[in-house]
Length: 146
Image (cartoon, rainbow, N blue to C red; front, side, top):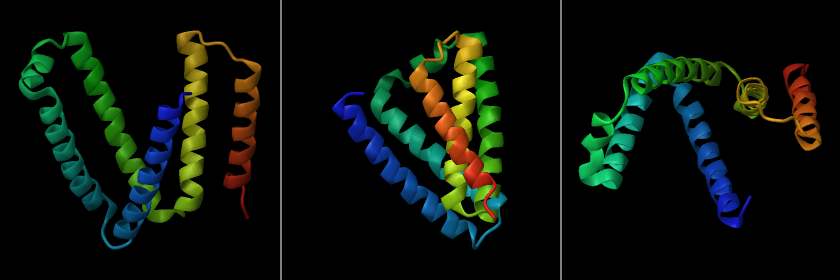
């Protein structure tokens, strides 16, 4: 990974941590479904505004040139993201984020490694195996805490 990518990862980590803390504080005061609706509105608004700025007049080009197959794929992805949003916000309201975030991140990493191997024919290297084993060990410690 190059230096710019590492800097972006660091910035993403800081921003992500701040958003998790803010979400948890807000979720303590309102029902999680209400939170998801409000958060989704503002995230969608932000995405549309940034996309409009970046694409300028090419905004309609994106929609005119998407294939039927890509549309179906994106609807499926949208449905999965919706399920994920509600699930994660529910968990955020009811669990400690200091344990939840690492559990979600580790679980997601394991699923992506398996999907890459099964569906994309990626190779399991020694480094990946050691890293995956370490994540499994960490997850077992977090999930089985007493």
